Image 1 (cartoon, rainbow, N blue to C red):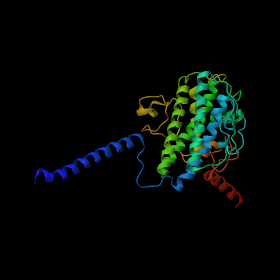
Image 2 (cartoon, rainbow, N blue to C red; image 1 turned 30 degrees about the horizontal axis):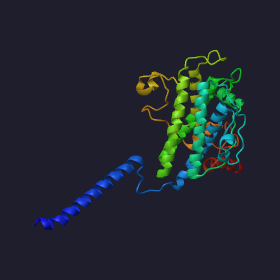
Image 3 (cartoon, one colour; image 1 turned 180 degrees about the horizontal axis):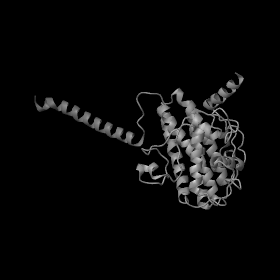
Image 4 (spheres, rainbow, N blue to C red; image 1 turned 60 degrees about the vertical axis):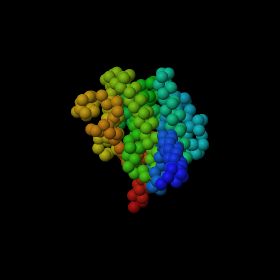
Length: 324
């Protein structure tokens, strides 16, 4: 074949090469800056909705706890539409925090507002449930944790260390709830939402535990014989008792056999023997948040029960049981 005959073929070859090169680099840019969405599967599977909406119960609780603790006001002032007409929390107020802690907690509060918006804009939601943040509710939790009444009653708003100890109670429950939900989330948009929420909740819990670990051996005044570590251990044991599904919680200091690779007694990040996060079901979450050990019996932080289909169905189970 002569040169003149090969010329059109060469032109075609070079044209295709340039097209492939441009397409390759265009795709490389796309995949570099944007997620590669699955070819198959649904963005949001119908079964994802109830699980993700259930998380709003914890997100509402954390929002009001952090915002009020740092700023003295909550969702009704920051983003009232997200509350959707739900009742204002009971007893929420500003805590006496040092400047650093106040800045951290305020940031956490604003983050929780974003979480509410992200969940509701993706899968919908329900109005804010009634939330009990009164000092006496926290005092009751601490009394239950120690098995006797503290004197004076524990006040979470009294100072920085008390507020951090009270904060130790809350975000970790949401964290293990997200880990528990993850195997049952099927849509790729739903998975992206859950992992984004889990990452920030984990960070919040890690910060709180780190701040407390720095004072782990210090006495919590005016309780002469109780250290910060003692409080965390008793709170963790209480959550395990209420959850009623085995050991899934640990305080800031553990035995060396329970530490990471059995080489440390520090426990800044609570995890299992493989250093993986523990997981809890919605029923376990409600048993803990209600403080009753019964997912069908409201109380504690949610005195009238949680919102959403899952919490409502568990509450109705108790009602139907009574009627029968």
